Length: 378
Image 1 (cartoon, one colour):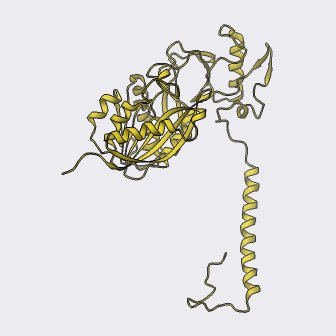
Image 2: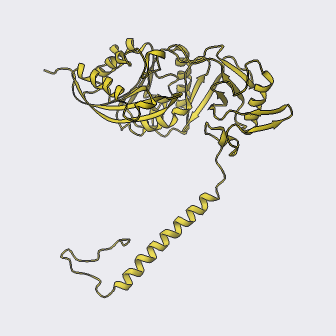
Image 3: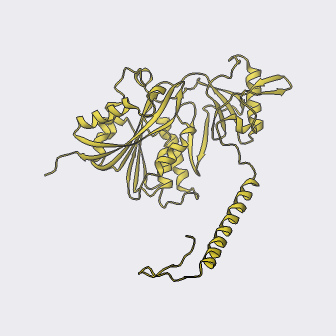
């Protein structure tokens, strides 16, 4: 161990009889050098300056101040929310801060100002006034209130993730920076030469990450929201000139289609995609453990014929309550039953907990692979 040389002949005859002490000294010297390297690395890491704040948690942004710590100001003291999203140069609070009223303009402004002071990259601080609704899952023109910084209408920004930019209209599109690790997870599974289909693409960050970070042969993104499509096409132009993208022809391999998923999918070539992403939006009371809907079966039935029946993979997103984790039997049953109904055999690869969408409500991703079935061949 630790020596790049044989210690015996192929017949098992020792080459260094009576030299055990010398061999031990060589091995110990090698190990000592390696441990010294590790010690130098640890010392260098400890001396590194702290990274710029990118986390959604205000604890990091305020240099370790505990949650709901009060910050003194000329107008009194304010309670800064524990967490919020940073999208581009916008800090987005998902609800009114504790103890604040929508009409308390001065207090809201002070909270926004405190956040902006601690992170110079933030130019606008806004709060979401309504819950997400509709097929676009967006707050709408009146659903956001800018409490500090530059007034923008609509509130548009460019967001960078792992070196790749997207354009986000916060009033009229849905985008979550908290899905960044999940997008990276998907990219790590895409193999060279795959054809990838991204449904419910939104502003197309998922599709652009795959185009810019993998060697997929083609990526097709489908989205219904016309404003999200406009944002996606603007970001597509960024992708063409992005020098940080190392994969050749990233923008050329990405196609963006505007339209309803259920109307677009029948126009695509059957059994032609190696991978399908389906981060479908939550359909209000129709989804979840108490939902009255079908769990997105109509979308499953539309996308399954496009997957290659032998080895095609799907990343199917669903919504589960805490008590359903980690097995997510209801989601598993929905996928298994739909595949069986369509004459397809499948194998569940992984169930990933993607994030929380509300109290005790979670977004999950069920990765499954088709293992047979499909169209009959002559």
